Image (cartoon, rainbow, N blue to C red; front, side, top):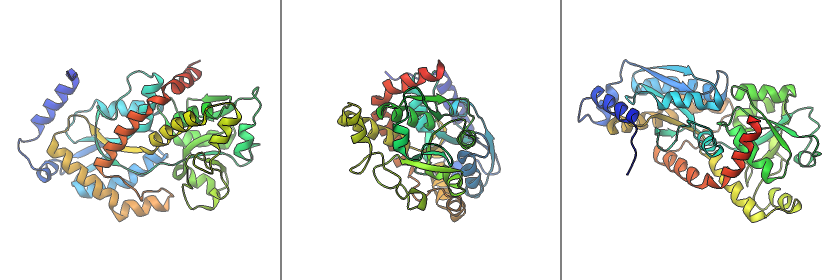
Length: 358
């Protein structure tokens, strides 16, 4: 039997009352024309989630004939904003972006009241592909990733994270354990802008973050990439020339795992699960229970807004890779497959979560 929450029943019933029965997809979206739509961003202003949402704002307004009001609901590594979106009425007047990778990871780590990307949202699309790198400040003593791996046990490597619901945490937790690092996770940062500043100031040593999100600081010379979390070069950019890959035939992981007495095959399975989880990226969503006609028209509108020159050109100029915005169906599949394969990471994330809490 499928359990249905009282809140979910009430939200679905409310949405059904707000929309006339039998509306086609186009008519369903027409019901939003002239309205104000809340767009929830789970991170602070100035970060990549906020920036890309504001770049998407005008194209989506044109598609819907509605006004988009961006609302930053920060805290708990993105969980506060995700909960706010989950708990909204599914009438098309509250949309937003969530960190599906972070939500799946937070659930595995043992965090409480974490929205499920599969069950608690109506997926509308994926904004961009995420490929992570390790970065450090320009004058860091860690000149290469080998320097990081050779760090003495008595001196933990400090990673910046923004709570257990952040991909900063998930990536740092899995990689530090698989690669045998004595790592500590410094939490309390409110989002991408805060973690970037923490690395630049030298409060922490390493940040694991999407390459597009950190490109500005790399190009300005404030930060240096140390490792590409991939099995092939993640971008054709001068800063990545000579930067090692994590996996694949030329990756550092297999040799490192053998060196510390681990099982390379088991490590490869964990790293594959991590890469798949990180690739889910920024999911554009509405609350669960959205009527089917409204779901169809919002998915079409979001897809057109993401494909618009206004969005793609502005995002690309800022260094974001928006060349592969997934279809809604592909975005749903990515979420489902990542959630199914990420269970292998649960013990690692639970141990790392205890380090944050202790």
